[in-house]
Amino acid sequence: MAAASPSDQSHIILFDVDDGLFKSCFGKDEDWSCRFVSLSSESCSTAALDNALCQPGLLSVVFMDMEGDHVNVLRNYYVKGGREFADPEVLSRTFGIGPWSFSGYTAHNYQLTLPASQKFGNNVKEQQYTKSNLVNAPVKDRLMTPKELSYDEYIEEYLYPDDDGNYDEEDLKLAPQKYESHRESMGTYSPLVMHESFNGGAVAYLGFVNGDGNIPLIVRALLTKQKI
Image (cartoon, rainbow, N blue to C red; front, side, top):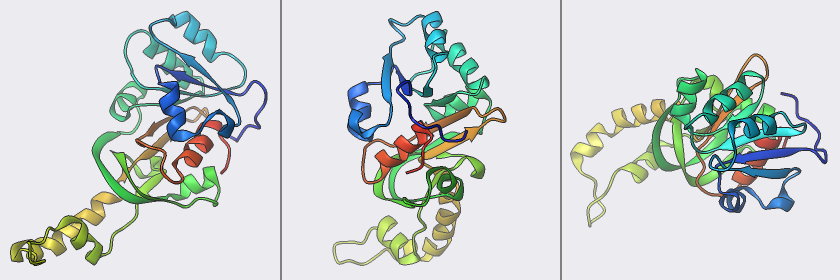
């Protein structure tokens, strides 16, 4: 999985992915060091997809859905050492990894994990407050985790005062215990997870729903196998 130098043949396949929406979030063509090939399950046969996956210079495949005969073609691509990015629970079942499971849609400040820094370098270490789909995944697969809140920040974020600015006494009584549970659970969640196989294949889930802050830089580094 060493980063490959971009070449005229370097490209990423978007399979059943809206090209315009993808680039509006993660960078226009000029922001990428490679080109894109868009394919659709409606017009692309399994044989044509298999042929596309064998072309030189292919860096990654991004796809949305896991239905029909194309699934087996994508699975074989991963087994042979390819890189794929899609939905967490379906990916977990289909490729026998994880377990990964959807845990919620919410907003946090994020920090990159050590494995992420090893992949992307140290120029980007965090992502500011933004909404994402979060996945519960093993620690070795997590590339980003929510930054830990202080107790006061937790109170401000999760407890709701009345019109006079006072908190419910019962809520405050339970707050310390709930805060500790919150800290423990947040450590298992991630908007960006990746599992790498022994042969260099990789499957990842991108839970980002926008292109806020450093997200485009992180996604481009991930898909092109280059440091930021």
